[in-house]
Length: 154
Image (cartoon, rainbow, N blue to C red; front, top):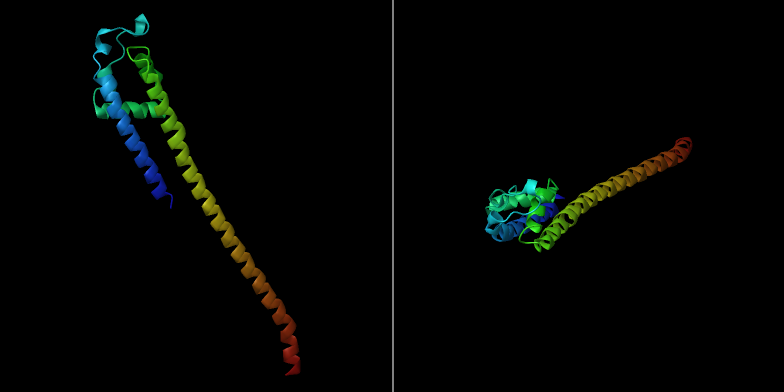
């Protein structure tokens, strides 16, 4: 039952990441200013390889997934925002908030909702079983009360 909403959420996440990967490939991967200027400290100068992280749409998709998962995302984002495009910080912040805090919370909400539904169904089944037990005890008690009188009268 949770498969349909989860597949929709994963589809939305994939579509959003794909659109963002096209944008980041165009804005970062195709920007030659990263090649001829040195940004950051002298020991990290030349460490950012725009082709490796944003050279194609698939590389950008993988890089954005790395940012989404929180894996060394500062080593990717910092050279970009400290470099020739400081306003891309708003793109990365929006991406992180939408994906990590938005989509992932929707996934957790769907899982929790499905868990609550399973618990409610189990409680209903338990109530039905208890009602059947009470009915059976009542029928047995009535049978014990009526049964001996019917036998002695007959």
